[in-house]
Amino acid sequence: MTTATLYVIATPIGNLEDMTYRAVRILAEVDLIAAEDTRHSLKLLNHFGISKPLTSYFDHNQQIKGERILNALRQGKSVALISDAGTPCVSDPGYQLVRDAVAENIPVIPIPGACAAIAALSASGLPTDTFTFAGFPPSRHGKRCTFLSGMNALPGTLVLYEAPHRLLDTLNDIREVLGDRHVIVARELTKIYEECIRGTTSEVIATVSQSIVRGEVVILIAPGKVAPPENEALEKVLERLMADENLSVKDIAKQAAAISGVSRSEAYAEALKLRTIED
Ligand code: SAM
Image (cartoon, rainbow, N blue to C red; front, side, top):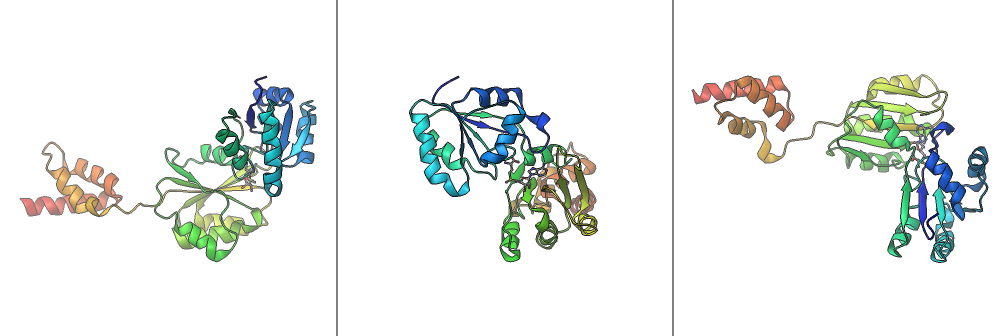
């Protein structure tokens, strides 16, 4: 075991089979395990037959505990950081400890595994080339709407965590602020009642309203139409493309639609108009 190393270890988000071999091995080898909730993590560790000194590291004791954990690392001990579920530091404690370890040149090694946001995204069917993970939205309506409006122009898929009892209110705010986009509510991933509720925000609101939503949820929001920048307005894009005599009107419309975010039929109609004017 490499000494004076902080291992950031992902644990399952429900299904214990998602624990990696490497996570089990490193947890069994480190000198100390820092866990968000020691009682909760003890069940996981017992399941895998791991018996190691445990210390708590959660939101409200980060300062004091962080210093003690850093001291152990400074003394050459190896420490594993785990949270209640999934990847530490992702809407879970850990960031400050990792930041401080990095600042002291203490090696920090991630042991990857489950993360609800990534699991939900991978099965969403929404674009994955660009996405924004924004954690939990604020719990109050006003602040939540401000938070969402800051995301309106972002490209790519939006990924949020939410508590089940706020799901309906948040979906209503999403519709109000971001429009009736395609959304997915990924619920209880890796567990018995796992499901993905898909549809327009209105459709998902209708489904979710029918019963009390229980368990854990991730909300994924399809990209909105990003307004084209001033200099890339449809007409300018068309003019530029029409300078290429090898392109047919159909090709021009296809490319212009992709660049400026309008529909192909709109781009085609506009291209025909411009060509008539030129002729
Ligand atoms: N660190 C964790 C991770 O890597 O996913 C996230 C911890 S955060 C405190 C808990 C939130 O993650 C839940 O409220 C829910 O939004 C999401 N989550 C965790 N497990 C989930 C699951 N099995 N299915 C759906 N969402 C889950």
